[in-house]
Image (cartoon, rainbow, N blue to C red; front, side):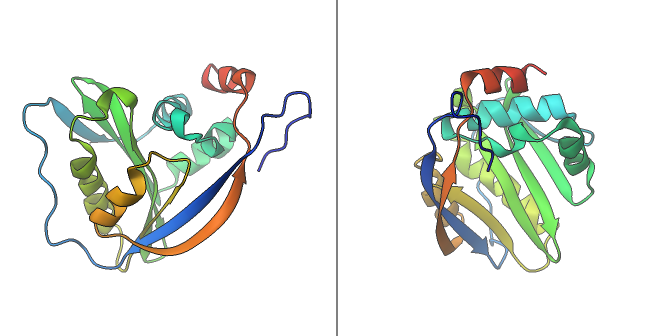
Length: 189
């Protein structure tokens, strides 16, 4: 957790983090919603500035900060690691969400998953999560894990559970949100 100087430090937020796992691949996946122009593309060589854009647009309302605070070199190393995979959802030709996977031994972790505001409420979440789960099972031999918290979208935990994830751990964490100046400096670099 990053601590800022007292005069610029944002008030911290407390959250309950729930870790979930799935130990068997689903027997079926949701179909893509009809009547929408959708494309899902794996970002083979995603650059830090585009990743930060996706991360910020998906996670801004939910206080996602960790990846925004990484130095370029550290983020680039993570993004170029063969154990890492990012797939971007496009709606009507524009970015609308992303998910990030990371192989961890014989398991796979759904590190980030989310939709941008303009894509919410259009019936995409279950299908898009199904795409993430299918991609994760192509990398996993044993299980998929994911974490969500009480600062995430209120539908996140129920969505994961409907998809077949089971809660296995809960813990409390404290988060220091980005200040307006921090966000401006990070997103504009």
